[in-house]
Amino acid sequence: MISKNAFIQFLIDEKALRFGDFTLKSGLKSPFFINLGDICSGSALKFVGQAFAQKIQADFGGADVLFGPPYKGISLSSAAAIAYTELYHQNVFTCYNRKEAKTHGEAGMFVGHTPQPGELIIVIDDVLTTGGTKVEAIELLEKTFDVTVSGVLVTVDRRTKGTDAGLGNYKLSALVTLPDIIEFLKEKNDANYKLMQAFWEG
Image 1 (cartoon, rainbow, N blue to C red):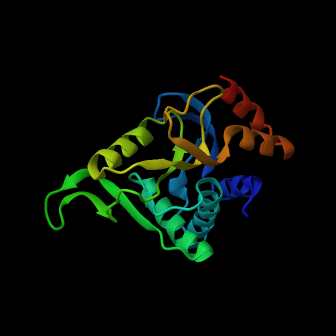
Image 2 (cartoon, rainbow, N blue to C red):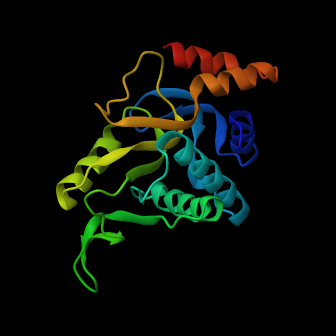
């Protein structure tokens, strides 16, 4: 099982977790930035996929379909599906939606497996700050295919202290949270933990 500390160190080593002065999509100022787009090598994607697969098994008891919202969710869900099949010998399907419907070729808004009622479907994405984009993905899936999504799994739960995930009754799981990263940095005597602590506490 890949530990939280091992995954945080991996994010730092891959420069997917960086410190500085950033403005998030939400408009919030942040002393750190998490960019899973920097996870782009075969070995790095394999590691992320294994971490996801282990978390899927532990928190959801498995999965039939992994839905990856564009764009980062696409590669993450693909890596997770491959790793899950390798680790647990169960075939897992993937699908994703286009941001704009294709009008030629196979056409349509979705690519990959067509979700079916009764399948265990999990949304896989990079980070969660407010949950808004995740809700959009869930509603799109459920409305289009008449299915029920089991929950959302992200690499980092980036919410500040006391902030609601905004997912309603949908389950949220994360490989690591901000308090996990803060504790890791504190143990490493990395002064950045103070900046993250202040951000988390608001």
